[in-house]
Image (cartoon, rainbow, N blue to C red; front, side, top):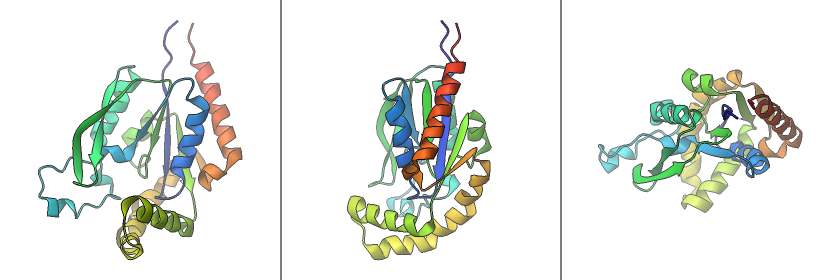
Length: 212
């Protein structure tokens, strides 16, 4: 039996929209089979050539912050059923770490991140494109709670960054990619009906790709 072509699912949406919840819900269904999650924010560009003060100015919500060429090439390698070394980003140093994570090819590849639908080359690799659509007030509340709890930031700094960078970048780059989505999911992982429909679709595609 020939190995079937891996299924690529793109999950986009703004920061705090619930992308991770959707990703986890799909992963939980297929984890006993063959699924891998590729997070876009592991693919921020290496900034080792810049001074630390210059790295602090990085706009992580802009498409140019990502090494999309590397991400595309590694997805293509996984589609060829070969392993890759996924990069790791060091947020303390604001550059890529020397460490990598070995990723084995799987039947389902979930590509998750704020801008995974922004690049046409990435979209062409996807079989299913999802956009998690959540109201801005919920997204900022979730981001505040996350950054204070997990990153030790103050509420003032989170709000300032949201107003000066996150919100304008969302409106300019992230929100427009909703138009490329096959399915728009309101309220993220809390939308059980949408998750069930997507899971059913994934199973159908996988079954159709089994070659004798």
